[in-house]
Amino acid sequence: MLFHLISLFITFEGGEGCGKSVQARALYRRLSKLAIPALLTHEPGVTSLGRKLSRWLKWSEGTDISPLT
Image 1 (cartoon, rainbow, N blue to C red):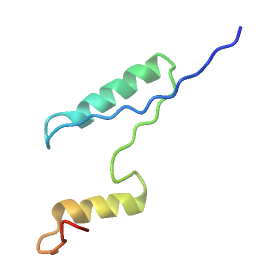
Image 2 (cartoon, rainbow, N blue to C red):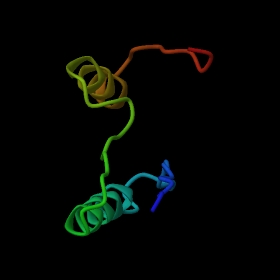
Image 3 (cartoon, rainbow, N blue to C red):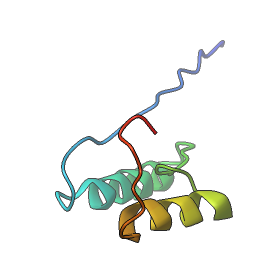
Image 4 (cartoon, helix red, strand yellow):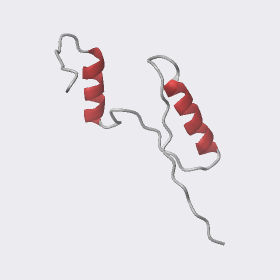
């Protein structure tokens, strides 16, 4: 029997603090329990550079970053 695998990219959209991360983790745990391969990630990424960029962008004050950047 031949099975075709379909890959999905699921995103959670919404404002700050509305529960996107909570829902994403819940879905990831559910898929894992069902033995469905899944990767949980977030922007700007899970690398050490991504974490540093995220912290800098979210919590730095007076950085004068233009909207174009």
